[in-house]
Image (cartoon, rainbow, N blue to C red):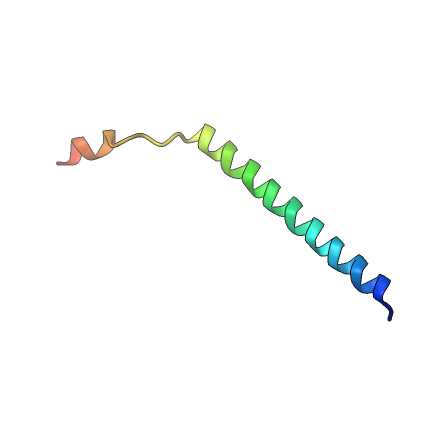
Length: 47
């Protein structure tokens, strides 16, 4: 094994990590739009 293989795997791993984080960010934003956070409306009814 040589340096080029190691560098290729390093950059490929970093790229896949960033793509995964980006997709998780999109999923979280989608869930926030589908289920918006209600600011304390439910707590007022219980107390």
